Length: 393
Image (cartoon, rainbow, N blue to C red; front, side, top):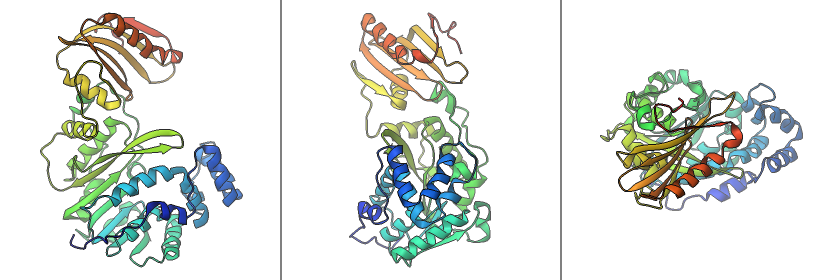
């Protein structure tokens, strides 16, 4: 990777604005926007997105380039966060990039502008998507990007070993390999002990085959649940692709007004010596170091990492909620260590919250636990238990 990136980089806001991709604060604003662009296609797209009707969203979305770009307003926040992150990676100086699942070419054309001396190749199985991508590249006057309609399973017929020094996939492998379901688990360390994966590593071995020995694979799949990220990291390792945890990042973006996060994973053929659990803790806590002291509170997976760091502890009491006619389950528990009282709320689908209180603050701890359970009490009946033996599973 010897070609230097140009010092003056393109501006991501200018890029989106020039393509007519608007920031929509609500679904209502989104549908108003795309309807103004093409009311007929908007009417076709709505029941597909809302799952009122089965069909191929991409075939409808990509019928015209103008409508395809307008529809990108739905994911504008996510794509801006992703492409901004890529733009900030000074270590990326590619000669040849492959994007797997390029859709309408929005990202690939950005890479072509960002790395003008590199060759960018985008592949996708959607005929409409590739047609839009080619039109977008022509509209932008880009000569260093090309697009091909190729199914993932046919890539080996088109490219040779070590063809690319950067390979990128964004929300693609959940469709190539099948949907990535939310993983049910109570404890991340326990869940990862068996080194679970998403199945056959053969898919990612293809990525390894095309990647140069010192190349980089960037993946930003639908891995919002930490357990799913662990399975993805394990699958990468089976394919000789090792997550570089210090280089990876958790992206913040908005799904309209709802704040969300998604990991962007940097993988190379260089081993790190870290276990998946160690690497994940490094990734999730590097921008929010864990401080184990009274009056600290943590949410999401950081709450679980802090809870396990506290070491040996004694169970005091708990409450349990099983959502009727669903697999969601919650626990709200009080634990004690030599120095602290812990109010730990957690669910079997990733919900986590931890309050660390000074030793002896039982009244405050009981109140916090009641408040934590009260937030979910509308979902179903709450069962109390005084020992782990009596705790419902």
